[in-house]
Image 1 (cartoon, rainbow, N blue to C red):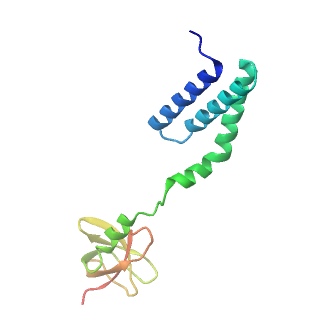
Image 2 (cartoon, rainbow, N blue to C red; image 1 turned 30 degrees about the vertical axis):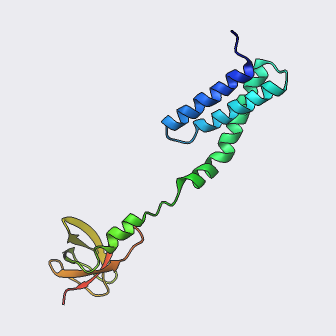
Image 3 (cartoon, rainbow, N blue to C red; image 1 turned 180 degrees about the vertical axis):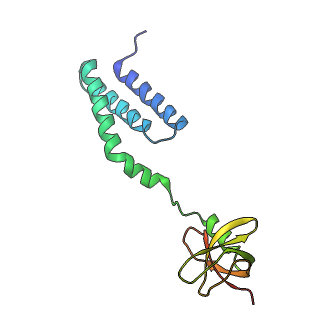
Length: 150
């Protein structure tokens, strides 16, 4: 039994889709679409395997270079993670110890829960003093605004 050209391109497209599911990168899917385009072209037009192959290569590369960035942007989702916000916010009101001097113009360092964090303050705080975490001072949640413990 001989398999027709359009059917072979269709099965190649299915194989590329399976490979895309197994590999990260959002690249192989465009070769699947190229296979489907070649399959449709072979089904509708009486063209040689060489022309079908060129249709596959050109359509795959055109789709890859024109749609990959858009696809990644649409499928990537929101990088900002609310878990990070909750983690940083859960530190507010807790005590920490200054390990590197903090001045209004220069961030220092605090030790809290066994980890070291960047810290800033509106007042000068010396090393060894205990401070209270007021809020997060940066979007990444890695720098805290602190004040001296009263």
